[in-house]
Image (cartoon, rainbow, N blue to C red; front, side, top):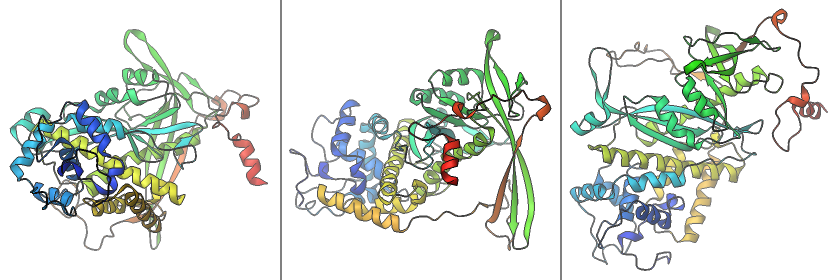
Length: 489
């Protein structure tokens, strides 16, 4: 047996999570257990460290019951029978989860969350600013009385939803899909409230993007005080008076606050026209108006066209929830396991921890293969992590296994594909969407065309004489005009 065990460990404490043990080391797990005050007073067959690994492994095998999850953890450990240890029953595992509580998993997420992109990471930085975004999603939890009282349900106007729901908001690094922070609460708690809890993670040198549900004076003011730059979309009903037209056709406006307070913002408007393609050519076109407000007020430093293009990277956060809900959780209709709010909280923190650990492996693979992180399949990385659970690796064997997995994932890298769109339709006629036609393709090719909505030239002031020197440029890189000259040469 490999000699990588900590002195004084009992058999259950020797169990690891395979590849994910590189993120969730025994030392780190012990630290968060002690910090949360969850250490058992006497030796048990289900000690706290094992239960942390068990709760995390639940998110690798979401379709398996407690007994099968535990079996995955211990299956390949040869000394199990020799030392007289037997897997616990479901009731014992439930009690051990309750003893552990949510604290260790919350602290564990705090330790593993954070940015991972560098200046060399594609899509991680723009003009020296680290790109981040906010996005939220709802998670169904079992319909116990305790969960219903704690979290509440959505409603469709006729009746309440079938399950209580937790609202989760994540702060994400766009270039790598790393989760910087997360907050969740009951369905009744709005995304703006959750966003206030995540502002502690913002720093100067970041650019935070957000969708239409976030703009409000109080939240905008609090976010700007962190030193981060902001680029948020506004809804059609949001009032933005024209205070001053800028020379590039965008304009300055303001947000109204209490007691006559105002905050100046720059407004960039544009339309995105989506052309759906079939075998005969363009079959349909739809247009959507976008209105962005930003703290980047100088048009000579930050052109409107670049901001319009930049905002598309915000959709990275939406793909994170696709990874979690579809690939990690097992489908859009799957619910969590836990019937009590404390265990729901424990389960959600574990979900986020496992996502971040899978992310660490994808970033390592991308760095090793010199590929963008988006080219490494989350689904295949998750499958590799599952296959490694329960293996008895020494540190050297674990490092070698990680290199082999990275090589395999790099060989199966996802190739960039042209734009596609899938209709919002369903085969279930009872749903609110239209029914899929029998001969309707699952997806169609699309082309997106962006058109800036600018003030006419006769209403614009004269531009500054020299705009190149005022352009925002990442540290250590030539100015945009010099880059263009170098490229042309």
